[in-house]
Amino acid sequence: MARRRPPYLLKERTRHGKTAWYVRKGDGPRTRIKGDYGSPEFMAEYEAAIRGEADRAPTKAKDAQGSLAWLIARYRDSAAWATLSMATRRQRENIFKHVIDSAGSFAFASIDKGDIAAGRDKRAKTPAQANNFLKAMRGLFQWGCEAQLVKTDPTQGVKGVPVKSEGFHVWTEDEIGRFEVRWPIGTRERLALAILLYTGLRRGDAARLGRQHVRDGVILMRTEKTNTQVAIPILPELKAVIDASPTGDLALIARHDGQPMAKEGFGNWFKDACKAAGVPGSAHGLRKAGATRAAENGATERELNAIFGWTGSKMASHYTQTADRAKLAKQAMGKMGRNETGLANPAPKILLPAPKNKSN
Image 1 (cartoon, rainbow, N blue to C red):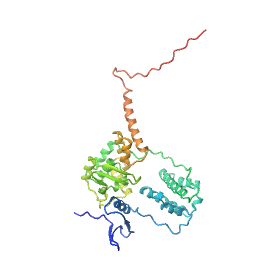
Image 2 (image 1 turned 30 degrees about the vertical axis):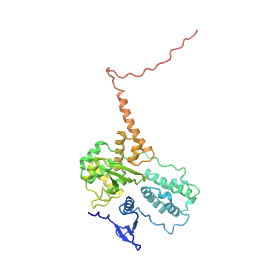
Image 3 (image 1 turned 120 degrees about the horizontal axis):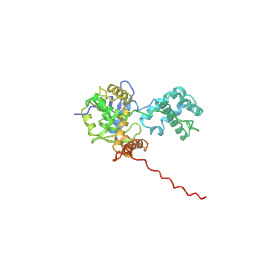
Image 4 (image 1 turned 180 degrees about the vertical axis):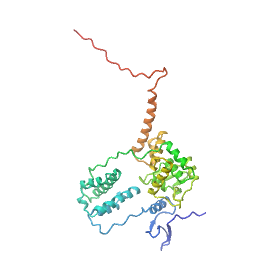
């Protein structure tokens, strides 16, 4: 049986007799899809076009040379921008949109450290938003200095807002069990939990995971955030859930109409499922739970990096060190109890030097 063509995908024949593929949703713009039909590169471009990430809005003609809006437009055309992940680009686009609305006509050469600090403080009630603003502006001006468009970097020396939160709640085994009772195998909610828990994928990657990413029982995909290639074997527990669940074609976790979910929509939908199960969890909390499980079962830093798509050693070492501390604490507690004689383990003796003889 022929495979059904993905939705919104149009096939046309050029005047040179070649096949061209486009994505068009309703009366929206057409987006050209490159690569061989069905290839990983082709599907990646297709998914980006469906999410509206393939193209950015064109630069406005009124952006005067030397203005902040003009500098941002040049930054978007740079190699530095192209190396950013799609998720980071989308995040910075949202930040730059507000920056352009409020200060796009200002000369970028007039922006100083105080202006950057003021923009950070304006968002300080939400520390993550304030820090993302600072990262976006720092990326812009550091590139501007390198491209010799900007003489000084006004973000230099501006500190981020301290984040006091410990981050996303890590699911406990009891919470995982309660969710599984509420959402049995065969539901989309249980499929989402299994994918998040047994792959360690972030919510954006879990939302776009489809059969095109599976080869010989292994998930092969580039992560949205870091653009790192991961190869994740599908565990028997996950395979059993996938086989018994309703799935889409381009995305395993699909809407009721079979279409992929956007990352934000997926996150909100999964939060509702957590509330229905009476657990305080989130999609990212399951990723942390998976990392905790792996570390406690002896996974090394390199193995954790391979699974979760981390680079460097910071994140992996956090989980391995936490697991090691738990094991050491458990071993040490045994030494604080009573020994085989029934007496408490004695405290070590402290030997003092013998007193010296005093001469009369």
